[in-house]
Length: 208
Image (cartoon, rainbow, N blue to C red; front, side, top):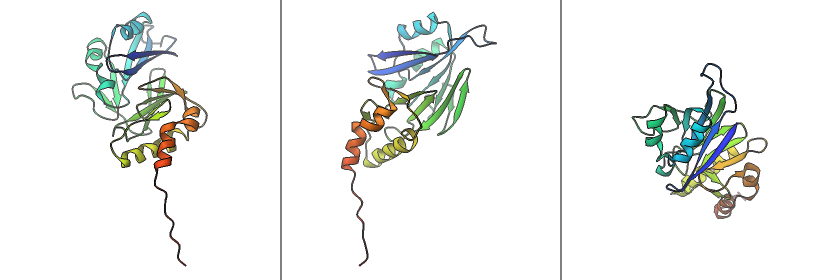
């Protein structure tokens, strides 16, 4: 697979295109691709798709904050692709709703949806092979911002129980900032360490 990383200066976010290296039988020898988080649709993204002769099959949305979906309006005027998201993004788009632990297959791509609410109720991570497209919930040294202590606790618990428990190492491809590795975030993520320091300690009562 070929991974194209694009920083969108308009939305200050990362967009990714994941393309297959070989044509798929029955698709007029077109290679296939999926796009993750179109924060802004510009010439560089279109050129990558067209120059590689990709058939864009799907758009994966990690969460529906505007700086990750702003480019959908332009994108859907150019390509006929299905949108996969935990939440219905825009009613006129043909969004395929997915849930936690769903396994989906699009051409050569097989991906799992991992729900990590907290930063956003619909926040999800897409796991494709050894890649984790994490949106805003996990980035290099940080976790997603939340509006309440309940949201923070929910997000940290989901990260620890669903992502950090994955066997082996993965490449973390966040919605903002540079890529990282899951092992590095397990060991050194400052956002999680700060949460653990601030977390109220449980009081243990004993009967004498």
